[in-house]
Length: 217
Image (cartoon, rainbow, N blue to C red; front, side, top):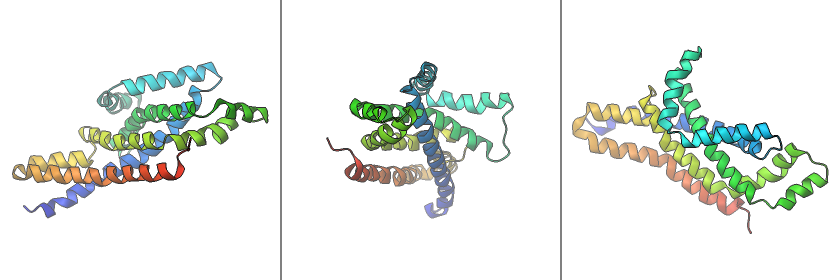
């Protein structure tokens, strides 16, 4: 069989990997930002919740997180008819990635001069306004490279979904390699190339955004 004939199977897996990256990445960015705001909140219970979320998420192996979502969550009666395991994979990737986003943003917040938050409060801005209008915009600009690195790591981590009933690029590659033993090496090279199609542009985007938006000191 010609390698060209295998490309449709690669394409199906590639589209799923891209879907996992886009949805999980967006959700991780949202949850990570919320967790970051909770970590610096004046309310103690929110700080404790955010700390527990972060420590459990970033110190638990991703495979274990997938086991929890795929095999434990259904016991709570949660069920969807549409792409059930894809949604669970997105939930697992989002939970695992959001603490890393939060920690990257927190490091950026630590770089924002304290005087700016004090100045915001002195003109009457509340905590939410100070964080959303003054602190977080600067933190995002200072953490563009580490955030892009988190999303590159998410791209590679999405391959774990292939072991949990999701037909992503890794699962497609495994199926093709099992069915075409004489083409294993070319199949693996093509799979690596598809991953590079995602990760290399992300790295270039990080460099470009860093030049344009990073805070100069």
